[in-house]
Length: 417
Image (cartoon, rainbow, N blue to C red; front, side, top):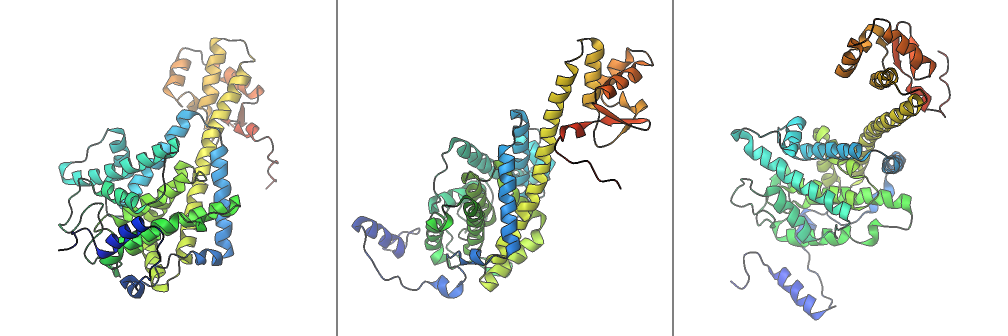
């Protein structure tokens, strides 16, 4: 044979053109143009997104900026990022049928869980995705994420399939040489997979997805990531692992942008997993209609839903830090004593959302129980009165709760019911 198993005429011609420099040639019509006419490498549908989708993208940008600019203790930020990483890995493997739950994935990540032998392959799938996501995380932090290339995409596929059993016609990280069906969908012709993946990489790195306007740039970044996912699913360039590869590429583009916090870059995988039935319908509908607008709108809604939940978690964490600081500042005004230390522990243990009966307060934590076991029967009442006078707690009948409302200085009082 004139060409090797992994080569073709197009690849050889590309090498010759690279040697010769800028030489024009007429491109023959490729098979995919007839079988998959929706693969156009055009982003014109973005201009026709409905107003609601643009509003969602605007909200997503605002929340991302708020999350990025919210100061948190390093340990708290690390915990939030870790939870997001675990959720992202669990989601992207669950879509493919992996049944390890979030707690088990967390155990794998922390080294505290080992799957039984019958599910060892599922653990390997999770480990591969965790490794890939962690590598992207670390490269993002170092600022070393490079451009999207066909080799990068192949590398992601090689990583997610590493050490996993597969059929003989699957070669991790190599373009397939056979036809594939996913449900009712047939992937692009095998002979075009290399070409299409190279075209996709070049398209994603083109100036189509950038502008001089920050607000527009954010929307284009989300569109770029979603298009990357969608096109990998359409092309299906590999024998296996295409979905995981698509979601890794999507995550990488969001993380690399600098506009989406790392903990938020995992949200689309979570969304696709939580709405798996609609996810597959949207993929099928996009290929049948040749329009990407519905899929982008579907992804935007999921991104915002996830961001709303995340900003609430961030607010709770920030409130906890701010409340602790406020309590410490207030208690520092009193003389240092065992009583003031005990009162500090009491108010910090009290919830703000639910009032607790007085006789249940000392059981909020083991430390409180130990502290009050050494005191007289009226000590708790005296402590509560002192904290009430300091404005740190609120009384509701015979129940008590922390007065975190004092932290919301600029909120107007609630209207009477």
